[in-house]
Length: 75
Figure 1 (spheres, rainbow, N blue to C red):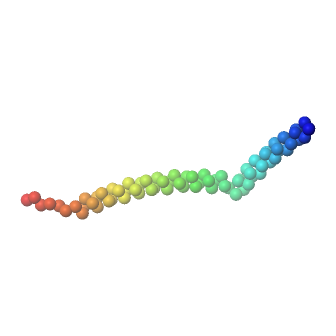
Figure 2 (figure 1 turned 90 degrees about the horizontal axis):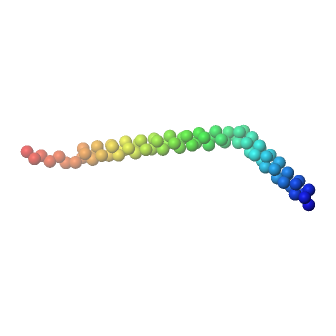
Figure 3 (figure 1 turned 45 degrees about the horizontal axis):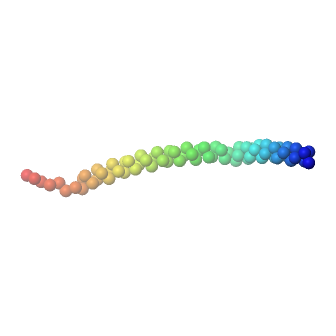
């Protein structure tokens, strides 16, 4: 019984090591890690662009509203 437990633990350990090695090889082959990194960088840049364009749009809207306000002639 003790021998069976030792062999089972050894097989689980070897299986886990093999799984991690094959997973790493698979991710490297399909360049998934690089794709994930690039998509993360792309999301950051898009968020920065969205924030900048939102500020620009708000500034443009307030300037447009100032132009459309009727000017009163108090003379």
